[in-house]
Amino acid sequence: MRAYLASSIGAVCTAALVLPLSQPTSALAAPRITAPRDAEAAPGSTRSSTQSLPLTALASDRASGGAPEQDAAQGLVRRAVRPFSLLGVVWDDADAELHGTVQVRTRVRATHGWSGWQDLETHNQEHGADPGTTERDAATVRGSTAPLWVGDSDGVEIRVRAAEEPGAEGAARELLPHGLRLELVDPGKDPADPARPGATDIPALSKAETEAGLAGAG
Image (cartoon, rainbow, N blue to C red):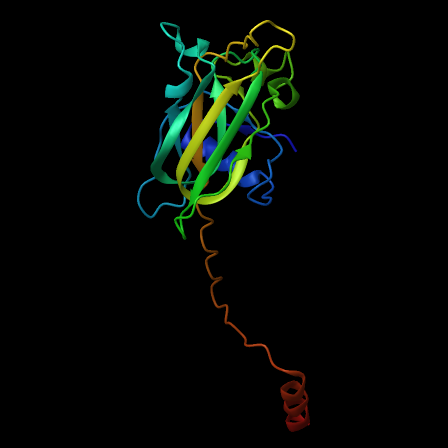
C-alpha cells in the first residue's frame, strides 16, 4: 500500500499510523515525504509530531570552499532529540536521485543503548509519486529515501555518502542532492477505546469452573 508522509501534524499522524509496522531493522513500504516543518503535539496528546534536521558536511569529508551539496559526505553527529519512531531523509528536488548511501543509527529510549548502522533505500524514483500525478506535481513534494521504522527512540546519528563514479580517475564522486534533511516522526499513541455505556467486564472462567456453574444451575 502506498501512503504519503506529510509535514503537518494531522497528515503525518494519518500516514504513519496506516503504514504496516515491521521489525525495527526493516524498511517500510515507502510513503512520500513532503515539505518538512517542525511540529510538536501538546503534552498528553495522542497526535503525532515531527522534527526536521538539516544535514551538514561531515568534518572529515568537507570539501574546501565548496557548496554544501558538493561535499562527499553529509550527516549529523550523535545527538539527543525528542522521541520518535519513524525516520527518512528528504531533499529539495523531487526529480533528483541520491546516488550514494544513507546510514543511520538510533538510541533506544528505554535502554539508552545505540543500534548498529542501518541502511535506508535511496532510489527515489522507485517509491516516489508517479509522474503526472497530483502528488508529484504538488509544490511541496520533495525527493526522499524510503522511510525506516526504528521503534521508540530519543537519539540519532546519520551519515550520507556520495557514490564514487566507477572508472573515473581519482574516483570522483557524484554531487549529493541539495537540501538534505533528516525527518523524524513520532506517530503518537492510539487513544484507549472508551468503554461502551452499560458495558461490564466479565472474567474468563476455566473449563472446570464453567462446568461447575452449569451443574449448579441445573
